[in-house]
Image 1 (cartoon, one colour):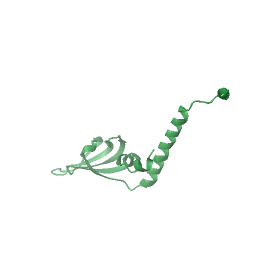
Image 2 (cartoon, helix red, strand yellow; image 1 turned 60 degrees about the horizontal axis):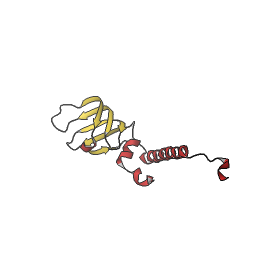
Image 3 (cartoon, one colour; image 1 turned 90 degrees about the horizontal axis):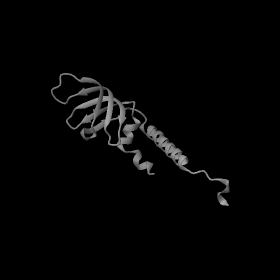
Image 4 (tube, rainbow, N blue to C red; image 1 turned 30 degrees about the vertical axis):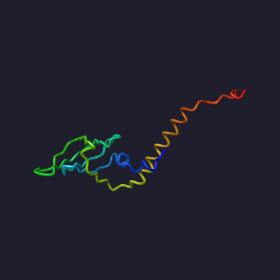
Length: 116
């Protein structure tokens, strides 16, 4: 598996910041700040404890307990000040551990008298 290439994919970066607050800027200049709860393979996000600020005409930011953000609407994501390279390394190690466990589980035991 090419972990080095996938390691810097936005979806992987978003996955490793689950539990941290990010600010998402949308194409319509709206900003959404919240704690990353979930990220799917399409980079759609679920944020908790959300502050939603419309680009124009809003008197004050609105708050929501949870919000789904469609990846097609995302212009950029402002990441939290956390050690992302370290989190990416840890994430890659977890993936490899799961893959090794699955491979080991799928191995058929070799019986002693198989050679006969």
